[in-house]
Length: 518
Image (tube, rainbow, N blue to C red):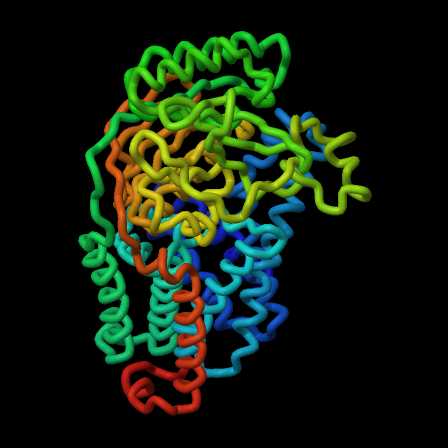
């Protein structure tokens, strides 16, 4: 029976992946998590609950982030017999967080109603938040991201993606509670008061999210401007090769020169060299084109100073003197562990030098808080690649910023789900901040995302091209911009306090509405 339960938990975790981009079947993760909650409610010990959580996570992360193998093997030149175990080891590590969820929720010795409806969802999201913080954080496949097209997105401007996760997890808890009652009573349970109340609460949560989607938290400021997002589609296996450099520079020069946009954005490290190494004639052409359009070009390039090397975006055009003098720039702050910096370098530096062959694999960090760039009549908050996964960091540039820009290179992950998942994450940054998000990528997904999180325009992946459109700046603050993740952490604490009071009959109304036995 225990083997069957673990197999069911594993399959439920695998099924969760279909809720995320590019599939988008958002109800699936909610039902899958409900299955895990039912299994937890029937686990005899804390260790058994932890094992069930571990197998659920192993299914979720093995299926959901298998694209890491592509980066390690295809472009990091790690042999397959090492890359496969390393990818599985990372999924195993992430599964320890879901195991922790199972163990902690089992420590709450109380009736199944408060534990299933309140404790399990609260602990699940608390551990998701922890996963997004510890060891520089990896919040990928946070449950809330699956709901980029569901009614629950209405909660994103209030509580952020973890708030959406919490509402989704409470929904799973209510579904699990209903199922447990059906098994326990084996009669006309759908007509019983507990089940009807649970269904009513579930419908209210989703109706509330749908209603909130119609609320405008920010206001348009100024006139729309024209933008061009450049997708160079430079293959990762040749991007840093000297023999391909001339063709790379010419491709970007041509794509920039053929457009009339006031703001043009190139991908992360579009010019794969140091700023001072960029040919001066190319610099002048880009600057002149931007000034002709009375705007600016944002260029991904490397910079260096005494502190080290930086993954940067610099502005050329009407707003600055360009490479020749003082200029606006953004330097990436949140670096990818083992991809952009090496912890304990004296001990682990051999990983980059001997095992992985990643150019510029040990970068310096930019400042934690950097002012938005004043370009093309807008105040643009730039983030690079993986940084837009951290909503609590994006809001540091707000409410000053009027536009969000993400430049990235998901070419590291080949033809996989990584780029679509990343684009889905960016949609939540737009929702949380009430700002449009512009994504310029090397191989896709290059897109223009509205303040409501909807994709307004998008280029096909793995094709060279430019995405031209009109974008609007916005001002004002959503509740999430003001409070960050503190609001959802407070809600988690209240849910746990409520479960404690419920179990001790401090709230006498609860037992009337919810069946307390199995």
